[in-house]
Length: 400
Image 1 (cartoon, rainbow, N blue to C red):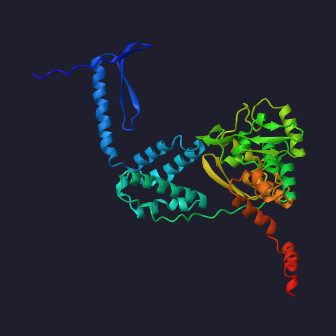
Image 2: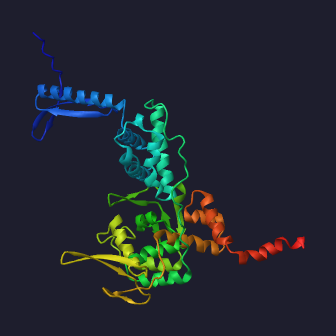
Image 3: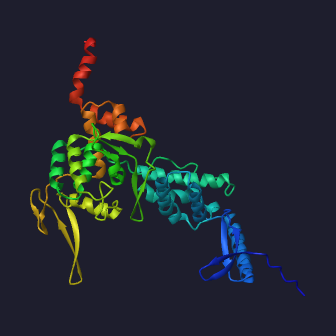
């Protein structure tokens, strides 16, 4: 007759519905899992079942899929990198690595598989492509270092690829004035003013709180201490900035200082740019704010309407100075595109035109790398043959 297994002496814990027996087991990553049951016998059965699941998962982990190892690699980055960077990694790994290759065994992936999976990333910007191919290399190199694969299929992937970004030019003084006039009294006006007069990034403006706006100082300034990002359309405010250089104090010019004082008097929120409830803007809310600018532009656009169940596509080509037929309060007054980053680029360009030295521009812009500043500086200051001709003439005067 088989001898019955001895039931361990489990601990107990009181819950709302009575006494429970409790114990803990370690999962494949060494994390403790708590198990509960009404009787010792039931708990023993749960423990055996959980141990069998962990054993099966351990066996699978010796030949992990791209999905399982990519997700494990992401978990290992938690605490090592900034939360915003981790969120960016998670999105790119999900879309460009797990989606095309997730079900394949890690050991079965070839260089051709990776190159084919990278095609969607190549259709995006150069920075997105480089970030994705970097993640491929990090994940597969980690798998190789842990002896899960013999060789990485990513060793010979080129870091170059994707579409080179087209830098939109800085707004002219005339365009700035028309933009400010077109948005006066509208939701995006405050964001635009801050962008044009301080050069803050979008994530820095949307995270800006009044405790960092020092209007009573002899020389008013604002401090960049927080950053905004969106997770599943929920705003997340963090003190973890893009770079150490992003943490800076920026002077507030008089026109912006006057406007901020007026806004602050009527504000009931701790955020400078806030939603109706006083909280930070969600991504979709920011998109609706920026729509006030888009609908006032003369850019051709297509609308989809449904009438009596029939889909009707209508193309509108706005004429500068005319009122919108659907809304008399909207006047097509902008014959140029505007992006949030363009406000920042305009600020930096104006600093350079005003003769501000490159190191000061670098500090005010929050650039960690001086090369970024100098590339912009060179394009703005020296991309004008007419102004450079006298300098060149003077340099070679001795040769005549």
